[in-house]
Image (tube, rainbow, N blue to C red; front, side, top):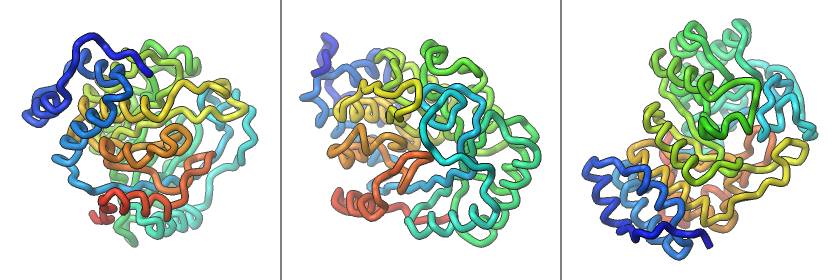
Length: 333
């Protein structure tokens, strides 16, 4: 059981304040993360009031396609596609435009409203941007899917081209706190990631940026991540929970349990009340049987597989949402 801070918090009163437009403090956010496990249901009930206010019982589904796998020069310790990873994954150059279009149809089949085109690597080349732009234009012309891209660091020209093609959202996670960043990767900085998020915002694309919890961050640092995302005004916040893949530097690291994950999700909702909070990578292996409870704080999930790891079957996600009495958000522009 986690050690709660000394002062008892009235979670419903805290939710009332948030719904009145009063931001929580870092101390209050830390109290959520460090609350005793027997308070989890009370915290989730309060978080749900905020979630319900902004999103009702809708659940947004997102689907990823790994358009370019492995072969990445970065040394991110959590990633099976990094240059330091020895994980046995598929490695391939860019999928054809036709394959990316087929993925869009699969996203529709899975009832996803957002299709996420993801590619490994430090940053895209001009040719790679043109390849994505061609695919995006055709998807936008033939479907009602919203398009998210995650292609690495982005300059102003590339961001402009993606925006003009109709990309709705660009994902570039902060991943961890500024203080913990040097323990995760050495080939780029926390500031590099912030710069790309800001570049995306300036282009008019909606910024998507989140975290990976369970990488050695302290509770205080977990709170710092949430407040940094609030400062960046990220519209969508994926909350990943480390899936320690064999062959990566963080293999074997297991710092989380389902109750801690739920408190982290609730904390993110309290700190960023109106934003899309998405339960992302690692939810199946970290939340386990408590996955449905996460949707009392979050309003979005990935459906199907992730980049190099398997996710829950789509039909199981649909059933989970139905069993909660929630409903899938329809794909519409």
